[in-house]
Figure 1 (cartoon, rainbow, N blue to C red):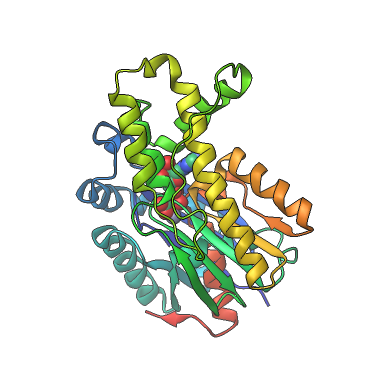
Figure 2 (figure 1 turned 60 degrees about the vertical axis):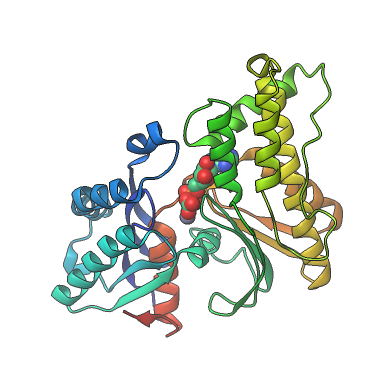
Length: 327
Ligand code: KG4
Ligand code: ZN
């Protein structure tokens, strides 16, 4: 039997609420404070928390209105409780706790990273089967897991410094491409592909040949900075720099994912997180998957970036499997 769950997500700079029932997204509202962080080139935690305080109420109301469900129709509330910015998480978890108490319904705490992977199950839940190599590629995380179920998974690799999305944001700042950097770099890189007369720049590809699934992005970030500082006409070269940076990062990521599949004898890859909305990344993994006969899943862009549908959906799943920890 399906249950109706309200999801709440406030772990970073998106204030989000969603109603999900039976794994189907009935409403999915996201309000972002990204414009307030733009001038700083990164998320300012205090500003993000204040935005959540101001907008969460309205976002929840809008999600309920769009779903045509009243509060009385809700069976449970799911909320992201980790990882994330402490002040931001506190706004969402306090709100969710108070609402569940007032309504007398269960409150399920959801891990943000598991939710990013779960996003693949929404609206087409039978397509993805276990086990698989799952990875979260976002502004806060670059982590690879072996998933046996949504409640049983093992971390096998992670970044030792910057997350991939974070590196995109920092490199975009160096190149004056604005914030958030991921979409800006992807757009600029596309221009290089169209009229590529000069060869790609060879940026460092850290830990590529290492016998592990960890990442390090600080070297390539510094290399782009050096390149920009060396007085070359970077402005004219922006498409090539963006393309070369993107390729280097994604080639390392693709190799690690494929190596992980081979070592752990997995034939399925499931990705989630904001960076997965990058078409070049998905095309790359798709080519490798096809060549090796692997299945490859990734969510549509609206479910890659932070959203509450993934939180509500995972909450529903955990509640039914009695795996959810009630806050
Ligand atoms: O998952 P997400 O919305 O928030 C976190 O949990 O971190 O991911 C945001 C990150 C940002 O760093 C942003 O630059 C990156 O995802 N991103 C992208 C693209 N769209 C968003 N990175 C590369 N290419 C994109 N198209
Ligand atoms: Zn996220």
